[in-house]
Length: 186
Image 1 (cartoon, helix red, strand yellow):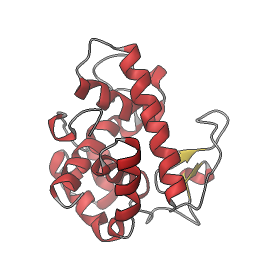
Image 2 (image 1 turned 180 degrees about the vertical axis):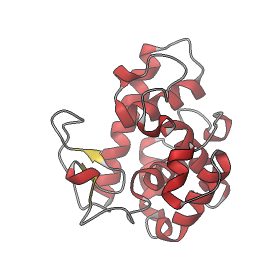
Image 3 (image 1 turned 60 degrees about the vertical axis):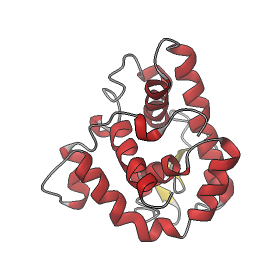
């Protein structure tokens, strides 16, 4: 889509810590792919919304699915739409705390309105990283934007974009999951 080809973004996949969500005996791209596949049936119910928002925002629907898989396990990790101990809302976990994103919860937790809001936040961060690091390739800027979606653009300080992300692997895991979704119907 418009920002970079998700299939061209290099990734190391999930860390050991992240892979233990599913008690996997391995980490890396294989672990990310396994977790994405685990979420596939639940993700299917949101496919038409994800594709619609992807088309409207020029973000690859597979990337949106990858974030949803990482953030909420396609809704499976949420309680009444809330995650992160009540600090984040919806499938894509929009941070509503004043010390985090400071956003408001828009729409139902599994609605097009929510996914569009969260994807807009992602687009904002891709833009911020592109401005901050104009010499990076489009793929590096996209990966940096994904990391910034997790912890803000001020925490992206080098091409090792995950050094300050949750699990130390956020963008690598999301990219690997997105690549799996791209190869499997998104």
